[in-house]
Every structure is written in structure tokens, then in C-alpha cells.
Image 1 (cartoon, rainbow, N blue to C red):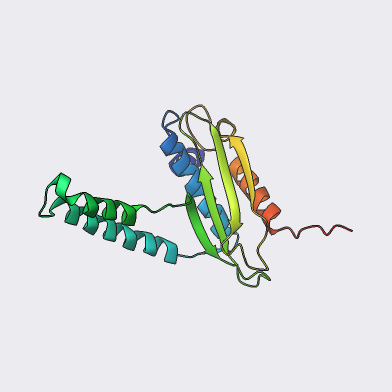
Image 2 (image 1 turned 90 degrees about the vertical axis):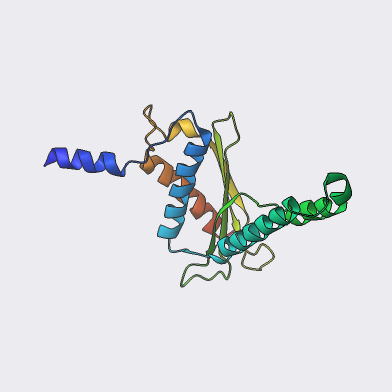
Length: 180
């Protein structure tokens, strides 16, 4: 019986290649999404759908540029136009949510993260989906080393990570203290 529990724990453990920062960031981002959704926030999929639609447009523009009648020197203006249309900046958002049910706020969250190449410092940001709203909270963030959340084998110690992320969510949700 105890062997089955150990086997189940090993199957459910999130393991990353510690030499690959994309693998580490992916696991941490996936866990952050799970934590935020478990707190009652519902994912706003409109942003994902818009990104998919823009991706399809970008592919169509790239195909148009590839098979355009003229060669490079003559189609310079067309290529510059394609590049300007394609230029689109994403804010590293990993999750956009609606406000939780029964909440007094009218805005959801935008959760974003960064894990620079050749660095072990993971930065997690939580901000309002509508920063101009009167109910928007101040953005909060933490920057910590990923080495405190992973074992030497690359297994995520979820309890420690959950505690840090939940503390950040609580900091965001806390009402600002009024100064006298």
C-alpha cells in the first residue's frame, strides 16, 4: 500500500530539467496558474483567443511576403509594412482572469513572470486587468531564486512555492492601509 502512495507521488510530481530555464519557467508558470484558479479566479480566455487570431494573421502576412511577386529590393516597402503590422508586444502575461465571484472588485488579475536566461531569479507580478479602474489594487511582485523551490533531482517542492504565491496573492488582495 505504501509503495502505491510513493508511486503516485512520483507520478504527480512536477519535474524539470534544471539545466533548461524554459522547462523551469514552464513548470512554475503552470503552477502559478493552478494556484490562482484554485483561489476562485476564472481564466479570461479572450486574451488567448486574440493571440491565436493575431498569430494566424501573422502567418498569413508571412506567406504573403514570401510569395509576393517582386524580389527583395523592389518589395522593401511591402516588407517594412509587414514588419510594422507584425510588431506586437506581449507583456509576459501567463494568465488573465475575471474577478472572483462575490468579490467587491470589478477587475481580474494579470499574472506575468520572468526568468531571464542564465539567471535563477524568477520574478512573478500580479496586477489588475484594468489598472485604471477604481477597484484596481497596486501591482505586487516578488523575485526569488528558483533553487529554493526545486530539489536536486528537479522536482518542484510545491508546498513552498504555493506558500510564496499565495502570500503574493494575499498582498495584492489586501486593502491598502489609509494614512492619517
